[in-house]
Length: 204
Ligand SMILES: C[S@@+](CC[C@H](N)C(=O)[O-])C[C@H]1O[C@@H](n2cnc3c(N)ncnc32)[C@H](O)[C@@H]1O
Image 1 (cartoon, helix red, strand yellow):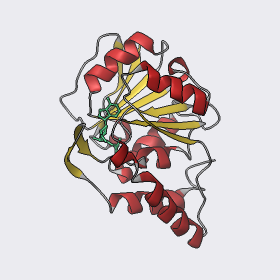
Image 2: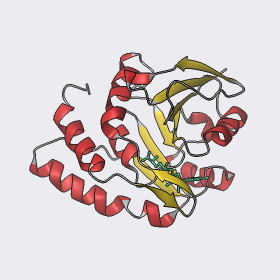
Image 3: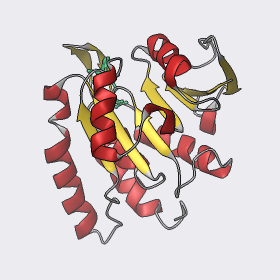
Image 4: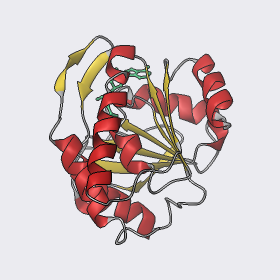
């Protein structure tokens, strides 16, 4: 399914969530929300370069908030998994998903595939991945692309270095120009989608 076919759907989805941005401190770490219109350009770049493949890519947002990145990403990947430590924040997903689906339906847009798995838990706790395995049928080593919006980016990098498969990608949103570096990772693209907001790393 190409980006062209989805253009209106993606535009409606990005506008819906970008009209509901958050920028505050939650109970469990800094909370801000990805700008989905910028992420669209990143996705286009990643699909164009074959890093995201609709039939096979397993995507995981390690701190998914209200699941907005998962909703958008679901159109471009095989599995769109999100982990969120704060149940209150995660509970925003259901009502928003329902409202957005009604909007997409009324506009004759494409409804998201049923490949979104949002799980409450700590991404650093192995038990959370037990839950991922039982719900989505995949393990940490099956993930092809991890994502975080700054949150715990360095700690998550250590976890991926320890448990991820060699070659797994790590998309870090929220940095431009001065980028972090992670042991065991190479920098693949310092400005994904030319948005000056996201960098792509790959485990060696
Ligand atoms: C900056 S927000 C980003 C939300 C979403 N990814 C987005 O871009 O819109 C980070 C989220 O990570 C969650 N978080 C923090 N530490 C976490 C952990 N150890 N495991 C899972 N989620 C965590 C926070 O509660 C917060 O909702």
